[in-house]
Length: 138
Image (cartoon, rainbow, N blue to C red; front, side):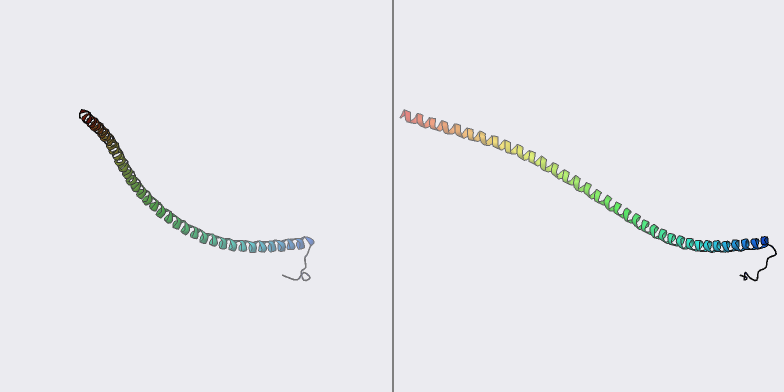
């Protein structure tokens, strides 16, 4: 910039215009510098955001893949559970049927035993009666 003392103006208006131009230039230079800094910061920030976005997309793909794998595992476990559940239900049904049959046979055998005991009691009573009648005849 020129030295203030060496500048000579023809009028106060010329000096005012000169200094207005200098202030405008200075403001424009500062604004241009701020704009350049802002643009560089924006590019850096955009680069960081793009990197972060790529990392997030990669992580998202990994999570989607893991989710799909876990869903398949869950489906497999559900299938195994259903098979085991139906097998257990079938076995329980068979055991209940066997238990019913066994209980029926047990009840039938208990009735038969009571009938045999009753018949045995009848035979013993008849034997005693016969023995007592035989001794009465003698």
